[in-house]
Length: 88
Image (tube, rainbow, N blue to C red; front, side, top):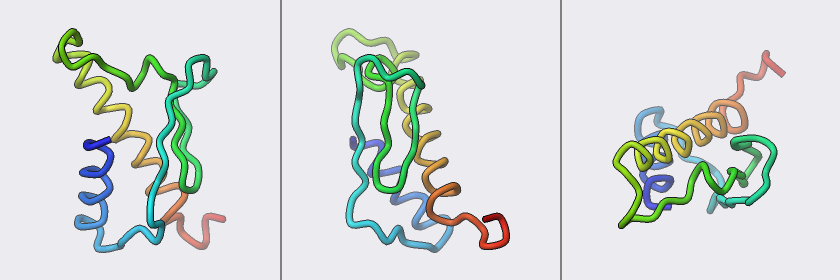
């Protein structure tokens, strides 16, 4: 969750556009058929793609989770928040 907050803050700063949503929910679903999916205000993830055990997970596993979270938030940002008017 901390990573997601930092990613959204980074997008807000980098692009100079603040997300109009007061919050974005992230949910891990055990048997989610997709790896992850972004929606307006909600990003769903396959549980195994985003949950780590701080004591047992490798650096590689933690990096993979960071990549998946940032990737889906980028989809949220560009696909749901700032889609060009002419692209609709």
